[in-house]
Amino acid sequence: MSSSEQHPAPRTRPTRVTAAAAVAGLEALALFAGGVYVLVNTLTGTPDGVTQALTGGATLVALGLIPLLAARGLLRCRSWSRGPAIVTQIMALPVAYTLLTATGAAIPAGIALAAAAVTGLVCLVHPATTQALGIGRGGA
Image (tube, rainbow, N blue to C red; front, top):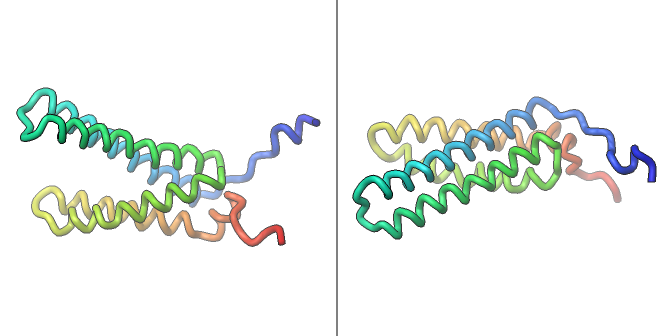
């Protein structure tokens, strides 16, 4: 097997793929930060239910892995990464709606999350993205 067969030439990465990866990375960072915040508050404060708070914090940290891995895959132009990235954006929309219907500081957070999710979705479904990731009608 030649060297070019072992290491295929990298595809060029459109700006939209990089933008989608950035959105997914920011969402991963937000999930990690939220999870750590809940965990630290659980350990230093007086939560109503310690077990429930620890589980919630650990769940947020674990959920942060999905967009993080998707962002890494998008940066490397891996076709598998588009699915988890799209699912993450779709799941962010109801969370954004919930934040938008709340009061106080949750409203700007909802606006930011909705804008990020829509931006991510638009970037992920663009034909340049699908082509760069090798997804499409090729083959048969």
